[in-house]
View 1 (cartoon, rainbow, N blue to C red):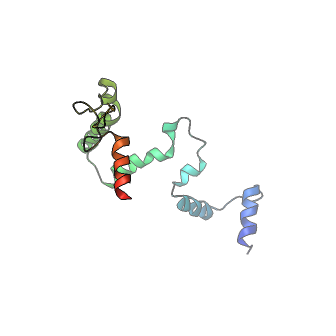
View 2 (view 1 turned 90 degrees about the vertical axis):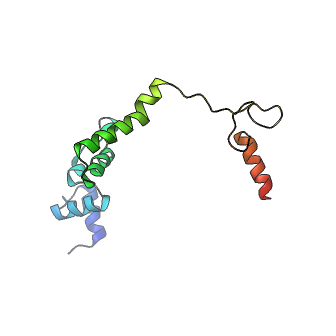
View 3 (view 1 turned 120 degrees about the vertical axis):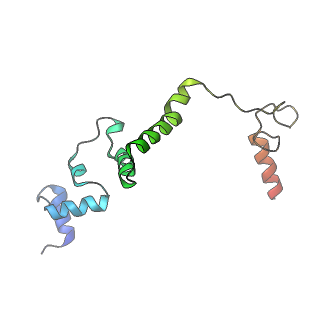
Length: 125
């Protein structure tokens, strides 16, 4: 039996073909299906095997067609339709930030993000 390093070297150089068992072990170690080992690079970002996670999610939870439709509706609302329909204006308190001369939107406690974080850092000292 050959040393593992020598076998790996032979496989990497193409001097030897891997056995079926070796391919199964490689696929398991990479957490991909055996067929994915033989696929060319994805044609587009959406051909990426990573997106099979969505399919695995639905299958793993045994979602019904109705549940899949609901999941798609939620995803559509989150990533497509809302973004196209209406851009949301920034939330502003009446008058903006409580620091004199600053009119940026309020994050918390009547202050914009930068003034709020400055106040928190100063209080932590």
